[in-house]
Image 1 (tube, one colour):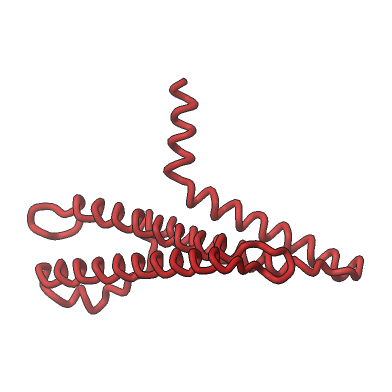
Image 2 (cartoon, rainbow, N blue to C red; image 1 turned 60 degrees about the vertical axis):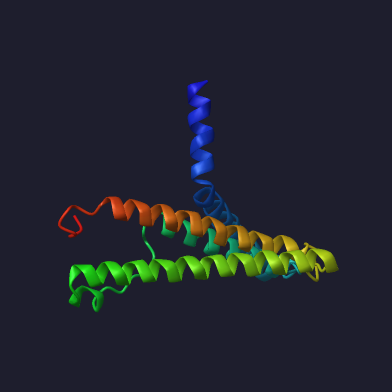
Length: 167
């Protein structure tokens, strides 16, 4: 029972990594098959671009969530390091607020757009995938990014020793 519980916990805590890797794998596989079908059989799939765009979008957004989890997002610290430690903390805090607000805004806008597309019933041209599914998935990715970024920031604060220098 404990083993099953650990597996379920792992899946829940790594859902963004698993989903991003799955999307990337399917994207690569579909692209290889599409190239083969297009150039060897000379009969391209008409729907492949819609799926590729969706998979690419989800790979990037959920992959960004993974980067936030491990602190792998881009940070240019050369100017910040010129300031005293107390000013560095203030800049880091303001940057954190800005990033969090941006992620919250993006999540809200994506969910709002998904909801309005759900009301209108708009779908993609060829496969008739509901556009609300695409935009709501992007909103979910931004929401997970917010959670991952918050977790990373809290862990980075716990890493500060008494003198204020990072270890």
